[in-house]
Length: 381
Image (cartoon, rainbow, N blue to C red; front, side, top):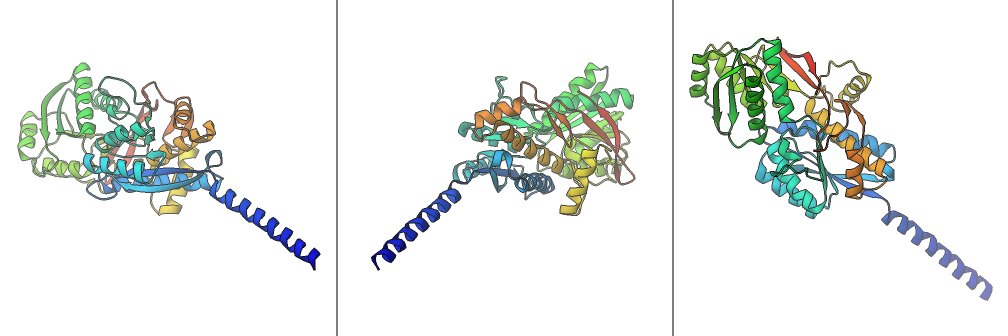
């Protein structure tokens, strides 16, 4: 009896050790927490949806193969509404409450900048797929923000691309430009276009601004009509350019419309901008195998062709996760070093980073024709 009692004690002790070991293994499992942030509501909600879809697909793929450096990825979503104040609130929530270590997003530069500035104080690394303002990664003193990166080209490059395209491909000599007050993305594009266009021998004959709430552009368009420029640069988001384009056509303005990546949306009124051109990060007509494969798996998941926002979100998430894998760690400084030295074959092109954490990559120029968005040219840095 005594012997049986002792045996029972041994069994209980062994079982306790096994169960304790299982509990330890569960609680010490390696995890990394990521926030995917963008405008999920509001006028630019399609931007946020694409960014989210692309980033989550990348996360799903990495988790399916065991995660970067063996870390299981957990994620939270943040709705920054393409608004600086909402974005600042989201940054505090995901960093302080959700305890994320990395952020994918946001989309609009005006929302990404306050997120970067707060997240950086807590050493949270951010990678935006589509925020093109130079201020996302560089402060007012010209210093690189250590924990901020992007997977897209910047406004100065985009502005130069479209100015060069206007001068060289369209043989334009005069241009009109409109911009939105208080929007860093739009102001950056407008200023760089003007600078490059005039440096190339062109003349900007109209340079006017509007505010976010404007829906009637009659006064500005009257000046454009009178000046009759060869091209009309409208570097705003798809909702506003659809309004401006439609009102311009009603006034009989025949200038060729030009824009930036903010035009890229399924909600763009293609009839309003018929014959126009805009710069973008990629085009689904690209025949590279990585692009063909990307479109195939995105369509299988979401039943639609990925736009540049989805592609940017996918590339941004993959860059961060590949850097974690390369570093073998989620230590922010180690991951920053890994990103700075990475050479990555992304859907939008092969990416390496310059000293200001901007990718060195090409831009695509697309044309709106017959209700479709078609590939027109590739412009290298």
